[in-house]
Length: 160
Image (cartoon, rainbow, N blue to C red; front, side, top):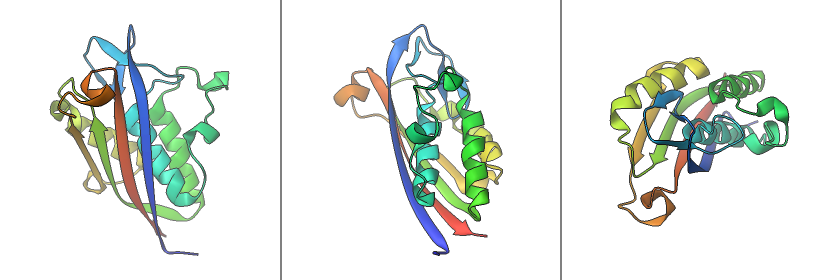
């Protein structure tokens, strides 16, 4: 079995009136939130998919299906803890994680330190192993038109 594994994750959610905007485990004041079966934390979803991908254990749609009422309104940070347990059970630990949010608005930079803290806590690692950044698409595409947000993540797992 390989001592190092790499995974990539991607997620996208539509913006919707009347929902809270939760990104990276942080509630951000904004006029819209992300639509989804759970809390629709697009960044944490991409992170979970990256870890599951590195482990060869599918994706969050398989692990937490949106057809299961148990996950209706679920806190993605609690789901991240389940993914962390799977990583540990497989004998791996996080080497590092790099995550990118793609959104035209709101400005994410003020919330990045708290996102890093919450994601690190959820994974049981030091913050130095977690990088979070954000970009716009210069008003191009669905994210640029503020129809939704997307996120990408890549992680390195190392055998314990």
